[in-house]
Length: 335
Image (cartoon, rainbow, N blue to C red; front, side):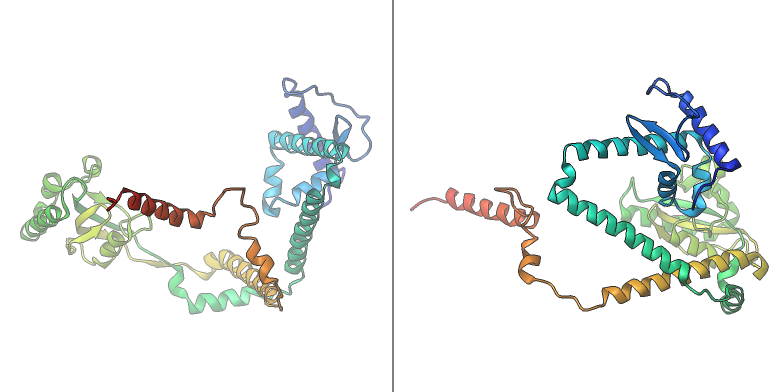
């Protein structure tokens, strides 16, 4: 992406200047129209150019870039960070750190990392994409169940917690509850008030809307989905909260999402999957090429970074056990 000096660039400059003027407590700030063309800001002999901003922006997902630069504060922070980075780099060169072998290797790795990302982007952009509209229609037809919108399920429930009582005691109590519910289903509300340990019962009186939804724990949601007729009572259900008995209050029928409503989201999903699979295959082919390694050097890496006297983490338990055994032997009576 290359920024041009159009209205967007003008707006960018105005926002950046405005934010700079608000930051005089942090650093001495001046605004000038005398900077060289394409130079956004300078500090301590270093400058940030539009090309620098372009390189910075390329690290932001394309769909997020406009939103990122719509904030004067983020613009200011980005420019200040780039200027700091350039000043630190200049001081490192002055100290001849760029001649250090380790630093040179790190620079080469940074270049390789950037080129690797550029190559993956090139592979993605060069892909010949199929007609996802047709593929989406075919997928929708073959997987209509994935586009079913579950109807809302309302239940009332009684919870017997096993947190403040033993599990056996909770089982016995929920057994009493289930027997009472089956004997007097019309008294379910009263049984909620009498037996339920759910603290939310003071507000909802045991009523759970969307009981089959994803926000509910799985065993509870599954039990709610099995109830078909209002007034139907579930078997005892165990969850991480304890034991429940459910009664169905109402159930709305599921509806089918039309292809027209699912089309855009489905096409996007198929496109992303297609690209991801293509990139995975491409990198998998590279990973699968013949590899030759030095067994000795690979093995040496395990201890390469140990400090003098330091043990590998995996050896610490064994060493501790050996020391305990040695102390135990020393404590044995001597004959």
